[in-house]
Structure formats: C-alpha cells, structure tokens
Image (tube, rainbow, N blue to C red; front, side):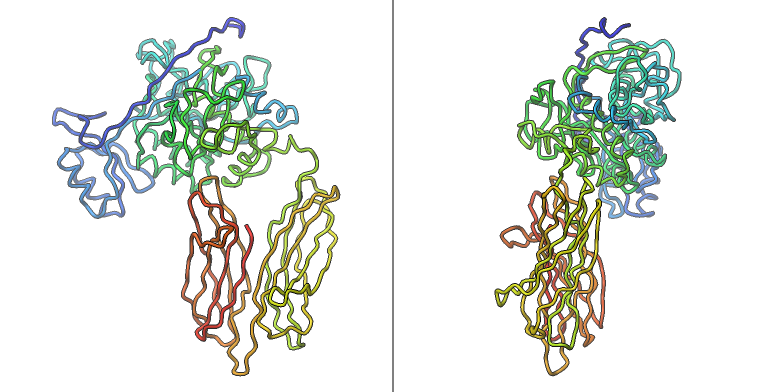
Length: 605
C-alpha cells in the first residue's frame, strides 16, 4: 500500500473510568464465589503475608512492595484495615487513547536533528502499549526484545474493528506474544523510531531500539497490574525511555509504585495527557504523576487539539492531529490523539540521551528548556511545543549566554586584620566561547566595594576558587556579598551573587560557626521547586547547635525549611527542599552554636 493510497482513519477509544472499590462487580478473574481482583500495596513482610493468607489466588507478585490477588470482598475490606497494608485497589483497566497523524517530524525539527547525524542510536525505548508489528518493513530493523502480559498476549480471535471498534485488527498470524493485534502500539512505535530506510515514514529517533511491552489486549484495554508489570519488566531490562500512550481517569497505586520503581532506575517516562478535551485540569493518569512527562496534542498550525486534555501537569505539547505512522502489516494510517503526541517526545528523549545527557532529570530539563512557545496557555502547552533540534543544540545560534553553575563564599580565618573570603565558582558556555569571570566583593554593612578582580577563562567550562580581601575589616561581623559576572567572547553575560556574614571576634574564645561547604543541586520542574543542599559546618569552640536550610521567594518569604540538630566541632549533611508551583529565588543556610552565634549564607537559584 503506498502512502498516496492512505485514507484518513479516525478511530476513537474511550478511556474506561474505574469506579471506587466495591462499586463494581467482580473483575478479571472473578469466580463463581464472587471473588474480586485487587492490587495490594504492603508496608512490610507482615502485610505481604496477610495479603497471601486472604487470597483465594495470588495472580502476581512485584519486585516492589505490592501484589495482585483474587479475594473475597469481605477479606479485601479486612485488608484495607490492616496497618501493614498501604492500599487495596480494585484491579481496573487503562485503555489506549483515541488516535489519528505526522508532519510532526518537521514541526518539531526532528528532521534537522537527523540531518545533523543525530539518530538516537544505542538508546532503548519501551513502547508500553498494544504491541509492535513484528515484521513491519520500516520497524523490523529497530526491534529489540519484547514482552507481553498473559492477559494481553497477541491473538487472532479478537474480531475486527480496530482500535476504535472494540476489537483487533484481524492480523492472520501472531508472530510473537508481543505482536500488535490492535494497530495502536505500532503507530506509536513508528512515530518514535521508524527507520530512515527509504520505506514508509521517518521516526523522531530512527536508530533507537524499540521494545514492545504489550500490556493492552487487542481491544486496547489492560489491567492496572499488567501495566505495572510491563513498567517493571522494562525497568529491569535497563531501558532508557518508556513511552505510555495510555491512561485512565483514576489513579492506580500499583501503577504508581511501578513508576517509582522505574524512576529509581533512571528511566525517562513519557505519557499521553489524555483525550478528555475540551476541558481544564483533566490530565489522565499516569501522565499526571510528577515522575512522568505529560504531553498534550497540537495540530499542524500549533493550535491545541480540541480533544486534548489540559491541566497544570502538562509539560510539553507535540503534534497529535492526523499523524501519519505505521500500522500492521507494512501499512500506514493517520491517527489523532495525545497518544500520537506522546511518542514524539519519547523519541526526542532518546535523541537527548544518545547525545550524551543520561540523567533522567537532565533529559527532562533539556526537553523543556528547548520547547517553542507557540502562544498557548501554560496548562495547554506546558513549557511549549517540542523542538528536537534545539534540545540537541541543533537550533543554536552560536551565541547562548554563559551559565553560572556554582558560586559559594566561605570565610578564611586570618590574624592579619583583614576579612578574607574564598569565592568558589564554576561557569560554562554551550558555545564554548567563555572569556572572563569578574568578581566584586562588597561590604553591605558599610556600603563599600572592597575588591574587584577579573579572571580570564576560555572553552566551554571553567572553575576555580578566588581569594577576596576586605582590608582592615577582620572581626567586624559585617555582611558581605560577592557578585560574579561571566562573559563570553560575543559579549553575552550572566550575573550571580552569594552572601556571607563575617564571624565576630570575641575575647572569650566563643567564635561563630563557619560554613565550610554549601552546594545546591537544582532538580526543579515546572510544577515543583526542588533543591538538594549539601553542607558542612564547623565551630572552633566545638559547640555547634543547629543548621537550617530554607527556600526563599524573591520577596524573602520562606516556602520550605529543614532544621538539623548538630553538635561538636563539625557536621555535614544533605537536605531536600521542595515547594509546589512556587518560584524560589534563593537558598539560605544558617549555622548556630550553643552561644547563639550565627553564620548565614545564601545562594541564588
């Protein structure tokens, strides 16, 4: 079948809504004894044992603290009251979202990335869906290992009707358990990674390895535990990206556990926002989980698709209307849905990883930072519409501003009558044209500039510690600020600042604490301001009392704080600070000793 012969195939799947426990009849493996199938999250071995004792049948045990059992309703209710059990949820289902087409490769500049030689080679992408055609002409070269849940395994007995008709696609033979008997998974796989082989269509990452994780049966539906098991299996294989064009209106705790399991193993997870639009605050699950990149759908003009779910959890938009991609066997069709938008982002994540960015949070940041603002509301586009080339630097104009990666100031103890400080700094420039780092020490208490110095730098990264001196100020207890300006050879510059309070001298040997290390790692995303603060403090008198770290907004309001009791002459730790939908401007560290002496430092973020 040629691409010219392709007819628009608009087929829709309605996502099932799972009711509250007890409102549905027996599901899945319900028996004549009216058993229900539930997922049980446990706190410990005692909880696992209790669940097994209550079960008429144990269907599945996970590597994390959960299992799926078939159990009498009364026994399930008893488990809900067991203190060793975290949750009991009925084993509901998720379904593939509605579908329909690509121009998306060009819209997202994936073609420019590919022309530059970026292909996603060496990266493993799991398509957690209805399977992947095991013999498709433009997918077969990229196929790796596959897996299928028993209840979702490929069948030729589903009946016709395709994704929107409540049945399968009438393939005549299942070539593997994970072969696609529905079309949906193969379509998503083609968008993510169809090969650049001259046949059919081109995917976002044409040399990434595709893995079929078949958790949805031929009718497009799959149980929570099957989906959780697929996520678990993929994470255990070491896959880099999981693409999930599926979802439900309700959360699932067992799927949530699986997402945590995968996140702990560094997997980048991408999911379709859902097709409940037009609506607000209606992103489906698992897309709305904060460990997952939620993707909304746009059309060829970058307008929001009328079916796309929206909400504060949306992080990226991508083409999802009339998207051309692969379907079994050696065929092609146009589908629409956030299901079609999702694999654009999954393929882009593979491209970023292949380019050398492997940390899951850094991959997410690269995609969000490179997105194009197409004029939609934040709850519709998140950071913007996906731009693959820019995420890889392909859209670079050669004059990105340099970046201040770290700036910390610590006091140096001296007996020469001067206040001295070491400013530790690290800077970088994506264009590789660093030029100079200028440092200014200001006595904020006296309102005077004490010292200015310039350090020549070059290349794409530099770091050092620079000694700054305020002559004659030793022991004054004044507040100081160090301002750093990094400039590149094109004149672009970035400014940052850090503050420190000089220790006061006293005649009784009661010195103030010293901050020896103060490092901040920023793991923020559009929904959360998250920072990890690593610190080391000391006190010459050996009477440390507390160390407090705080997130501050631009107006000085504290939005999160961690206080740690310490003692002796030195202490170190790492604090995790987070606040939801709050713009954090500074991190403040305060060390206090038993005498009430206090040392305070801040870092801009």
